Amino acid sequence: MCDITLTIENEERDLLMTLTPIEGKPKADLKTMQKAFKSSQYSTFLLIDGAMELLLAELTNATKAIKDEEQEDTVGVSAIIGNAVDASVTLTIAPENMSATLELKAGYGGKHVKNSDVINTLKEHKITKGIIKKNLINIVNSGKTLQGGKTISTEIARGVVSTVGIDGYIKYLVDDPSERILAPKKLDNGNVDMRELGDLVFVKAETKLAELIPPTAGINGFNIVGKIIEAIPGKASVMEEAEGSSFLDEKNNIIIAAIDGMPKHLDNSVSVSNLLEIKDIDVGTGNTRFDGSIFVKGDVREGMQLYASEDIVIGGVVESAMISSGGNISIAMGIIGRQISIDDELENSVLLHANGDVIAQFVQYADIFAKNDIKVAQYISHSQITVEGDLWVGNIENEKADGKIFSTFVHAGGVVDVGTLGSACGAMTHINFNYWVDTVEDLRIIADEQANKLIRRLPKIYKLLASCNAQNTIDPSKIDRIDKALKQHLVLLGSLNKEWLEKRDKISEHLVDLELSVNQSILSGVNIEISTKTSAFKRDHEATKIKWLENEISIEPVII
Image (cartoon, rainbow, N blue to C red; front, side, top):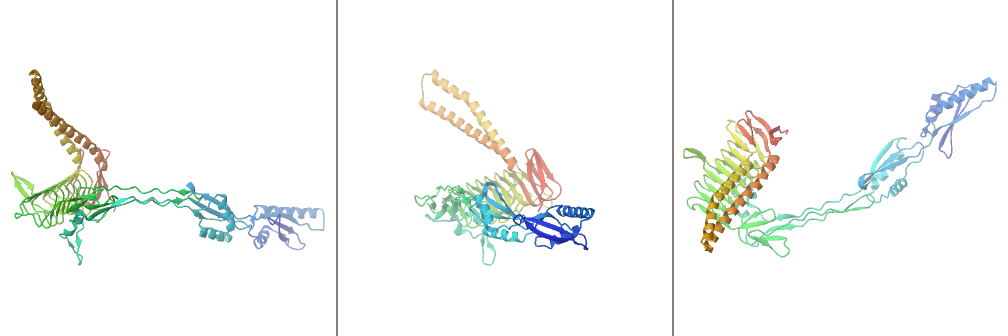
């Protein structure tokens, strides 16, 4: 057998293997050489591919030469079969110097990476901030036991993104009556009292109504090379005085009530309107008209009429009555109408008109128009609904509407959200999204009629002017009347034209934004009309979303 020895040279970087034949012992082979390497203290060195095979071949050739020359001395052969390779690190820096990742590659019998090596690497790349010391120590320690050639990596430094400041906002200090309607008072036994509204809808003069909360500056960040990342401050909000309210002092950051009355949240303020409080609207009170807001603690009885220039809040139910408001109409309970015969035609006995929102628990047999939105908590049945904004039917605390609309015609200018659309008996339910188309056309017709009226009156005006000139007498009063008449017609015409032209743009906007979300089911007997298209549902569908896409009604199932 050959004698196999391993030594290191060149500053302990190269591994030298020497094979020396010994008389009477087996010859060396590759397996024996490999075993000798693996059992040696240098087994972690990086082997040079094919080095052992070449050394073995050299030994064979040397042995043959000795025999051919009949020499008695044995000759050993040596060759470098491996090298010591130090462990290494590679640093990868993220865009904008926001983080650095260190990759450690284990060596082969060479030097391990030390903490100082990593720190020097960081210094070379000018990394001075956000160094994660724990990760640095862990990767160095893990590298000492890592198999040669294997790699591990970890984030070694991390910057901090700047925090955007919080926008300023208006903090309302009093409740809004319409919000109180949608969130009735909870009793100790867990039930709710739908009529308990009194204390929440009235404020005394000098009551603080809202506070302007300033924006925050945000928090600066930094990257790993120490550059400060400036924070973007929040946007300032604006608060203004409104009708019935004023600023507390010159700081203009708190609004107080200027009068006793009912508060109303506005986008950038709180208004307070004169408040008329009545127990019930019935034959005892008679029809009621008030310049301000009205709070009816009880019910509005059948046959009564109620008008207010501001909001109307009703703590009970509305029976067959007529109600008109310059603001919101909020009804704690619901609307109970019936069908009545007028000129041999059946009509609903309830009529509501609001220049703001309409809010109620339920609606039946009513004609309702809302300039803004309509929110109904439970259901709408056998009614005519016209809403310029959005329609929501369901519990407002839910993410999706879960109420019902059936046997009803809806003329919508916004989005419609409902749980179930249609009735099991197949009674017709119609959702028409052409509110803006129809409104613009009506305004255009009125504008055309006014223009024609002016054109018809122009000859008369010219004749009067000619008469004044022919008589060489100027009657100031007559000229003034002519001038006023002409200006009135022109102002009205200009106003009408402006209004219908401005609202014409709403048509295309609405077609893009409109959406009907039916979150539970659409039953047979439902018709959907958008632009010139109509979709009739002759069978039941599960949750569905309807939009207007590429001049067609798009009907897509909703995956729950």
